[in-house]
Length: 545
Ligand code: G16
Image (tube, rainbow, N blue to C red; front, side, top):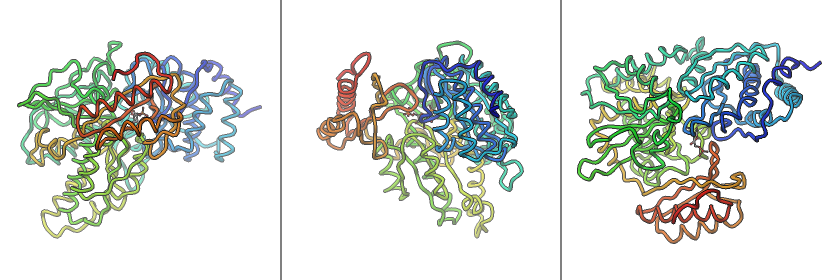
């Protein structure tokens, strides 16, 4: 009899629907109503992953982040809080697509033998979900998967994605030389609040920070964080905080909406001099914005601006601390605004490395540096400090009181950073610290460099899997001929660039364009989008030109 008899029985309660699943940019994402079998099977895979890691705690997050409310998704978190090792993604895809219960157990047996997994080892899986209505049913499916392999379940309830990543790392690092913190919500808030309050000591309090929480889980969580920080230190005003009403999540609000539309979200009235930011649906992204007092123009400070601000601050601190030999690198994707890359390379004199879209790609590249700053333009990112950097912060002998202060700031900065993944709450506080230290308004921060005009569009096509890319996703190799059409269009606009890639989280193809003027940029973006629509089976309304 198969060692997975119990699994086969449990699996029969979660029949696979007539749909195809892929482990994409951030796990499997599609309509929540289609996902029960997949989430059940992810429970099985997470249990095996835990055994593979000798019983270490593995995380599972049920969320579709920035996607529409009826979507949901699931992703696996490694013991130190990183995204699932890419070599296991195909196991997840295979399991999710297995047509029968017998196929599910066969695939499990193949994984066990290929990965040499000792099934007698214990397994622990920590999990959480966002506020989506499909969440409870998916959580129940996950729990059935865990029970079928007798994995110990640790339910963290409704929390942000980065909080779950943080808890997993805390659990696994508890009895090590480098414990990450207390694996509880209060532990998370206490750690961030203490680091923040240390870093702003002696700095004048700023005006309130207004947060558009995308009607998602970030709303209640940031209020809890705020109570730990204290209103003497920071005033937080939360907007778009309706989490118990359907059809509100990410609707005309949140970081993805603001970035794509380059305008304020609904539900807020941004006044000149006010400081605003937007989270996305699971609070792993953040963007800042303000309205100019003189012109009334909306100004967006995206992930690139956050990356440059963080890199500037880190460079200053390590110089002040006398730690100039630490290697600092900045990681970006093709969506990074050309002006930001130029600023980092020429002004900050720091190296930039490009990866494919997806935090999982940026994170691995950032691990190669002593201090790796990674941000996607959409506001998703964090800072990583390796053991050399940590040791230097903890044990370098300062020659002067100024060096001592800089070292203590660097230690606090590390505590303020959620190194496991991009975290809107942690990133918001990092930005706040830097702005206060420099005495900058959002407008002054924005003046570091001027963004090239840019536009991000979505085109819906019959089958986005026909889109294949190379060159860090900046060049299409399929459909045939489309890349040369794009090249010809780009050639007409001086200083421009444009690329097209299939989304790994939504059923859409993304079109990005950048140019010297807004008019050129929009013309180029809509022309490219029109060609994608015409040449690759567009659905719905053709993008206007
Ligand atoms: C996820 C990923 C991000 C990625 C975004 C869009 O964000 O974590 O790294 O930039 O999807 O990816 P794509 O263009 O492939 O759809 P989130 O905030 O939705 O988890």
